[in-house]
Length: 172
Image 1 (tube, rainbow, N blue to C red):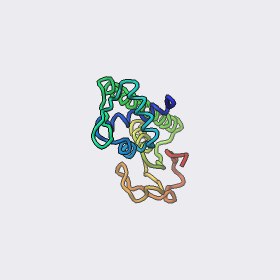
Image 2: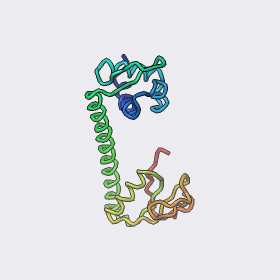
Image 3: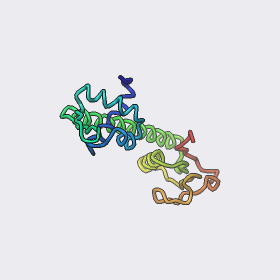
Image 4: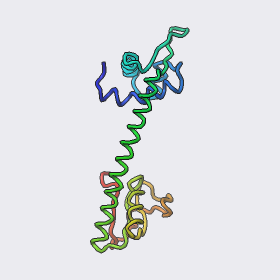
């Protein structure tokens, strides 16, 4: 048997692959889920043992894999768990952005330059709108020249030095 955390990490994608096409070979499941063939084999054995998947022999020395009703319920439960974890992470990130915007306001800041890209930038922008901070522009080397949230993204070197910078991707 494989480790519990490794099992949980790969169970949902494998169940989804089986549901989408029961006659996928283990190699095809491996390709679709980007999980190694050996790990697909181990997870499938475990899922069959737990009654979540049923295997039926088909021509050419292959097996077809079918979700059992219990397997379908487990797939749904896992998908909801992933959704809830993602939602919780979003809510934590949104709260951090709101707190940071409120700190700027308490310090008497009225305008900020957003530096960065991606979902964190979007959350910072929402926090600015909610708190009444004016965004003077978005600056990022990675996405310069693109249009983001109605702003043309400019190189970091064009960020006015006298404005407060809110760096949303500090680890990059």
